[in-house]
Amino acid sequence: MVFSQEITVKGKAFNSGKFNNRVVYIIKNDTINKQRKHSASLYANWKKNSKFENRKDNSYQEVSKSNDVIKLLLENKNYRTSTDSLGNFEIKAKLPDSLFFQSEWHTTKKYLVADLVKKKKINIKLKLEPCEVWPFHPEKPTKLYLFIGKKIKLWGSPSSYCNVGALDSRSLAKYLIVKNIYGNFKKDTIQFTSYIHSAPLEQNYIPFKTSFADYDYCLLYVLQYKGELIQVKYLYDDVYMTKEGKWASPLKPKGLFNTISPDLYKPTKMNFITPIEFEYEDRFGNEINQSFPKNYNTITDGKITVNYGYYVEDLFEIRKAEWLKPYDYLMK
Image (tube, rainbow, N blue to C red):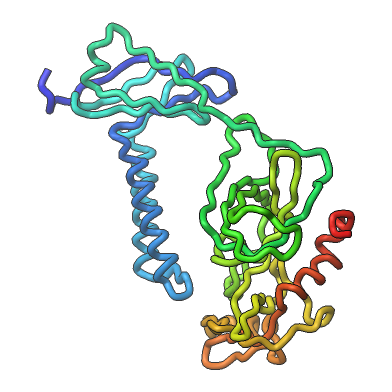
């Protein structure tokens, strides 16, 4: 056989059979995954460099073109095929090519075509991927930790098959303890779990981010359960240093999980070391004026400057009165 000659590789491939979906995909040279990584890179570049994440930008058009290539590859049996109901497959490839055998919730296997053709029969069996069962806590938390944290690392905890039906996504976070506010966590760093079910409605005229993971410094609220520290769901306050040497969080507009109504809790005039400023698109001028009251913000020439906010000590009192009310027994 000549290495440059294309041959037809035939055989059988099976997953564990544990689920209704028995299909195994056979992908040549990991071409599709490489294209997906390329698309992800283009998308990240667009998000980073597009001033208002404008989908008319040339950089976003490149993302669209790359995604179109992925669609074509997925439909092209020269690059990807799948097993039939009996596990049979066939695909054309060259001896130096590699074939990747993939199935949902199973560990991918990779073979050189040159090695596969040496087998009398090609019979590939995939094993279930390892799956970590998420902890379940029917008990009440025993302690509350409140601290200013500096982000070190965050990573996802895939649900996989052993957590099917979970309504939340789960991630793990590691933070440096910058300042203890309540509970006096004893170590310099803390690792905790965060569960999120949904996000606020996307409002592209609001410049504040919707996840604590997007900020470098946050006031974080973490509960101690048996064997696990868990963030109070959706609750955090991004914080910044003022010129007076105090930590504070800027006043938020309506619509975010951590918004505090200035009508209920009077904010304080702030003097942040780094001004809390954002640019916005002119077409969202009406929404901006409604969401950022001029009593507390300066809006001029396409820019918002947030002038008011809450000191960390005040934030704790506000959160105790509302969000942390179910945990009154931890704060006596």
